[in-house]
Length: 256
Ligand code: F6R
Image (cartoon, rainbow, N blue to C red; front, side, top):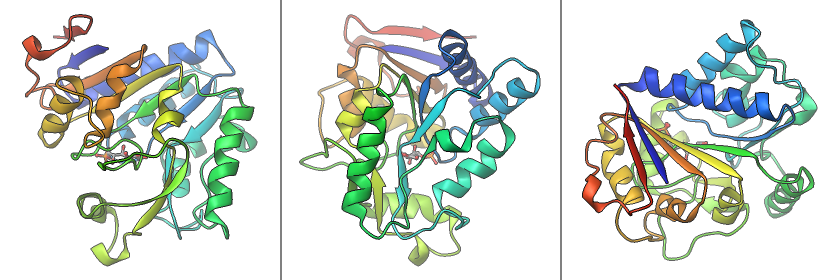
């Protein structure tokens, strides 16, 4: 595990964008796993800026989003389809046919999950997966639980996640209670993973992700088993990490 602590959210987002761009330079037809939420917004902005400056070309990439709310059609302003178009895809040259996001308006969610998993497999897997983290340690919508899903499944959102995400809706009652999410194995099968976290409200979840035992109660802690994981943080999100509690093979770097 490699942990990089940047000065602030802006520096963290810039580093993430540079890592995504270098993945695409090395492999122009990369399959990218993408996240929504507040955290990756500045990374997407930086990637758009780099695209405008001709520093990165998205024409051959395929994208696979982590999740989508059940019951929200693609054109719903709170759907993750809408978020991705509005914050990223409309401003870059990705081909529409290469965009994959679970369909929250599907008639048969079980089938949608199977088809989504199949589409990742058919594309030969994800080269680089971007993740955010919930303050309860969730990744995708894999919420803390005794058992975690292996593959893409319909999941129940926890009260904490509904509360956290209600900031994007008119009221908490409007937040869907279910979502389609990639499972833990879907995520862990990616060749490389970058987890982004910013702000002190993520500090406890990050501490429990990078040190201590792996637990399904902190889904992100399973990332400790991944051979190519980078955790990119700002100083606040890193504030509770105790270097002495990290495993011996963990690389810890603080950028000035
Ligand atoms: C989003 C996703 C979630 C978020 C997490 C953090 O596609 O899968 O796991 O990454 O809830 O959200 P923010 O960045 O809004 O704090």
